[in-house]
Length: 99
Image 1 (cartoon, helix red, strand yellow):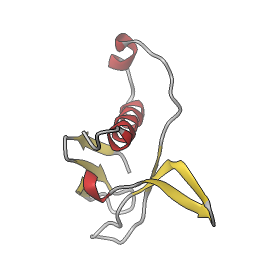
Image 2 (cartoon, rainbow, N blue to C red):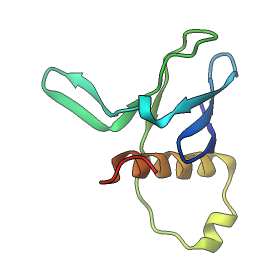
Image 3 (cartoon, rainbow, N blue to C red):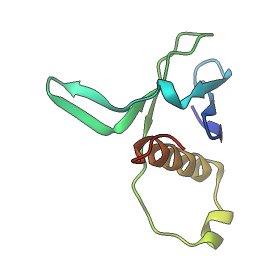
Image 4 (cartoon, one colour):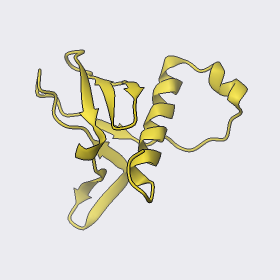
């Protein structure tokens, strides 16, 4: 499930089920998932189904926390993934569109 790399118009994501690395264009994504009639969770992002194994995955926006650049340099891989998810959400919700 980790985001491997975020680029201007797409990103690479590793499928949690089969391990395939796939490139996902930002233009196919919409922030928010319907959780009940008339209710949308804006912190969840549905990824397209994996073409290799048909797995459906979701990204959940992490809570925002203040940290210094020195703290960022010492992150674990999971922290890097959280930052990339946060950056992806910022790009998708920017007033002028993705990155």
